[in-house]
Image 1 (spheres, helix red, strand yellow):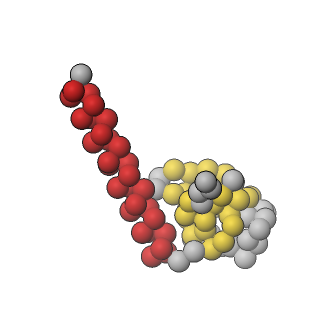
Image 2 (cartoon, helix red, strand yellow):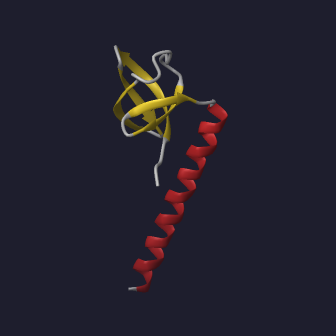
Amino acid sequence: MCLAVPARIIEIDGDKAVADAMGNRWNIRITLTPEIEVGDIVLVHAGYAITKVDEEEAKKTWELFEEIAQFEAERQKAEQEED
């Protein structure tokens, strides 16, 4: 299974960029999406921006990731309480 993560472009230098998703930043390439500008939101897969996405769709995905993280934290807490 492949996963592409929405991230906001915060810096661009040639075909290199810095992307931010929920406070996590990483270096990516925008070779496949040369029209991207700082502030745009893109889907990042395997270190490459593969397409520009709508901010509302990105927010929905970020909310789902947050729900998953909360669920996992609650699961781990419940396991610790059982021990």
